[in-house]
Image (cartoon, rainbow, N blue to C red):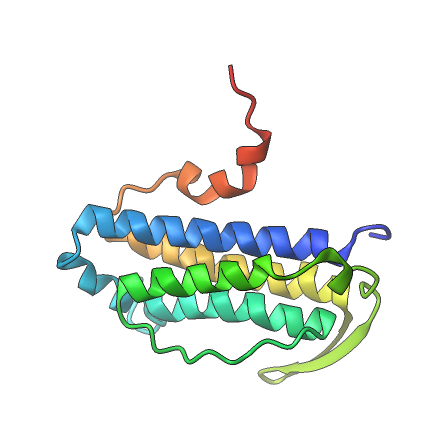
Length: 175
């Protein structure tokens, strides 16, 4: 995809995904009420799947690590110790705030930079563009969808608009 700039294929998707995540977590708190929302961070779809809090941490970490791997933008390591829904919402906002500090000129022009990294037993070699499109974005949305699915399974009244509106709202034509 020559001509596709790194900033445009990454920062808006990660930022809007984090906004979606923050919004669906907030909707879960509204649904359960603050006292009952304590069960949200430990909820999971199945026993051997990490709990909801782990998926929120991974979304945040994937967005941050993508900045470092794809564009050599250093980010600090955040401890993954948020253990309440309110703290997870704050983690989402912290990630959004970080993404807001990135300017296009920090990333654009680095699309063809090569990187090598280890993913479990696999050694991967790809360009920054390939990393974002084939690893960063899919992995990010995999974990975001798991949070959505866990909350739906737990009875939170979520629909497609809760997931998509941060991404499509600029394109909605008012009638």
